[in-house]
Structure formats: structure tokens, C-alpha cells
Length: 192
Image (cartoon, rainbow, N blue to C red; front, side, top):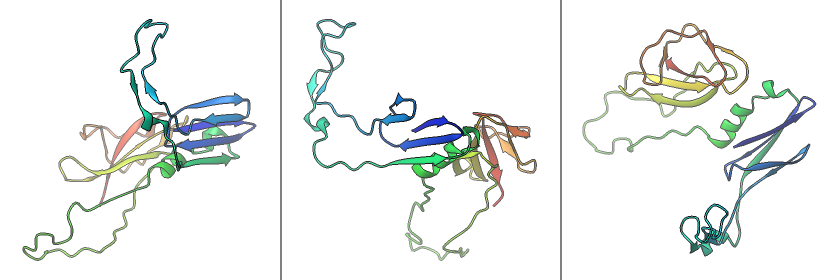
């Protein structure tokens, strides 16, 4: 979750994987909820449910979260206006590192030797439009191409490369758009 407070062309952003709750306590103070603990589920005698609990009424002693707790969060102060602070990309990079894996170990079956020898590392140049936030890099459902899905988390239009084919979310061909509008998603075909 991203919490941003901006004034005088400065953006202060707090990033947390924990409860997505915050409160503006004063004009320049953001209070973030890092964790929440309760020892009972279900409150009784609520205004809208007099005489009965809301949900299951049960003790949850493990919910008290007693003992040592380690929490991670990030704070970023950016002197640029909010529109230029690139907060969504920074939060995406902080919260979700790029991870890849191989489903089975190399030559796990010990059958025929591989006909193709590949390098241990492979570098792929991705056509990420400036200021767009990468959502996923994946193989298409028909296993025929690599796809880059990104979205516009800014308030401005982002120009898209004209030479790259675009697909809709169902991975069907569409007419290429020239711009990515705010809050819009685009799927780009990556040449490998």
C-alpha cells in the first residue's frame, strides 16, 4: 500500500505490506498501521446487532501477537511534484521484486541429452514505456510469445511505441494505441 502526502512540491510516500490503513494526524503527519491484534473475534451488542455478536464470538489468543515482531516498511521523500514522483513504480519495485524460476531441475529425467544448449543467464530488453508500471512479464497462454503487461499509474498520458504489437487482456490482437491513458492497462508483445 502506498500512502502519499504532498505539499510545496515535495512528496512523502510510505510503503507497507502490512494493513493498508493510514490516518492524516496533522497536516504533515501520516500515521500508518503496521499491525493490528485482537484477542476476540466478534463484538457483541453492536448498534445494528443488539444482543448478538457480529460473526463468530471466539477467543483468539494467538491474535494478540505477543513477542518479537519484525515489520518492513519504506519511506521516500521526493522533491518533485506528485505527477513526476513516479511513486507507483518505486512502490512496485520495493514491494515486488522480479522473480523467475525453472519448474524442474536441468535434466531431471536423465533421458535424451538436450539438443539446444542455453546460457545460464539471459538478458531480455523490455520495451517498457517511460513512467509505465510493469504488472507482469509472462508467456502467452498459447506459449507462442512473451508478453509485457503494464499500466499507467500517473495522471498524464504515456506515449506507446508504435512498432510493438499490442493485445487485449484476452491476448487477442487489437489496433495499436498511440497513448496509454491514466489507469489504463496495455499488453505488449515482446520479441525474443
